[in-house]
Image (cartoon, rainbow, N blue to C red):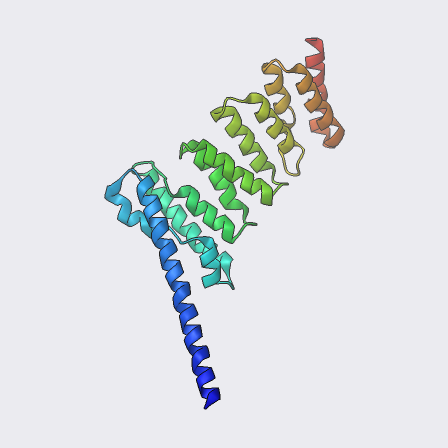
Length: 231
């Protein structure tokens, strides 16, 4: 009899925990929807767009702990559809960062969403600060990806009008595996055009010491000679 009562209590406790979990998920989803409703500028299509907004990735991992990468794939497909639909209509993407951030929380080692956000958020989405935040998140997980460093430099150059910081990012990119040959001299070009000849020479000398490709080395030596002639 006592054992039966004990089992009943455990079952009741389990059902209570399940109910509490799904209530928390529902509450979080409602809060997310309200937050995005306040930020959205086109109420006519809001009901359709909220269908794309997943709950917090923490709750998603709890709901499907075995395969978060599969969830990331599903949200990626939704993101592609969401972006394409708005690119062909109002060109407003208030949920894009949230979608990409959710994908990369579920699958942080997947590079493609970081690269997509690095290009689209600053350029198409007019979200420079959000773009830089997302690029930095990508660099945190993929520090050897030259493209992320390159896109950070490009964003700083084109949208922040900061050629020196951009040159530093391009320089980091140029030293990483897979970087194209032309990137070796780009940091020095930006720095010298900004009147920072010493910084330009520093970039060139450091690159010359680290890069082993003969074509890149010849380009670097030529650029060094050009700067020295204008001393």
